[in-house]
Image (cartoon, rainbow, N blue to C red):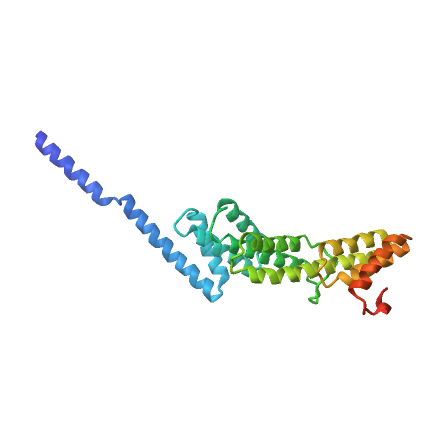
Length: 254
C-alpha cells in the first residue's frame, strides 16, 4: 500500500470513529432534556398533591445533579414535599443543608418560614395524645426554635411576604409556651414546691409579658411568696396584679 493510500485509509477510519461517537455537547443536551423532563414530572405530582412520587423524583434529581440548572429549585421543592409528608427530620436536614450551602440565596425568608412550620409540626407530633389533646407540660424546645425562625424573618426580611403570617404564629407560640410554663408552675404548687413555682411564674412574667397568662403568673407569684414568707416580694407582685387586673375574680386566686 502506498503512503497516499495509507493516509486515506487512516483519514476514513478517523472519520468513521468520530461519526460513531457522541460529542460532549450532545451528551450535555441529552442530560439537560432528561433533567427537564424529570423535573416537569415532579412539578405535576407536586401540584396534584402526589407528594410521594414527587419526593422520589426530586430526591433522585438532587442526588444526580446537585449543582444542575434546577438544583436550588429541586432542593426547595424537596424541603416543601418533606414538610407536607410530615417527614420533619428529613425536612430539617434538607433545610439546614440548603442554608449552609446557600447563605445568600434570595429565598432564605421562605426557607426560614418552612423551618418554622416544620418545627411546629414536630412539636405538635410530640404533644399529640391518643385522643388528640394537646399537652402543656411537655418540652417546648422545638416551639422556641419555631418562634426564633419567625422572629428572624421579621428582623432580617421585613419586606417578606411571610412577615404577616410569621407575626400571627409568634403570638400563638408565645401564648402556648407561656401556658406550658404555667402548667409546670401549677404542678409545683400542687407538690408545695413554692420556690420552683415562683421561678416559673416569674419567667413567664419576664419572657412573655404580653401573653394571656400574665394574670395567672402573678397570682402564682403572690401565692408562692406568701407560702415562702417573702412579704416584700409578695407585696410587689400583688401590687402589679391589682394594677393590671383590678376587676379579677379573687375567688379564683388559688
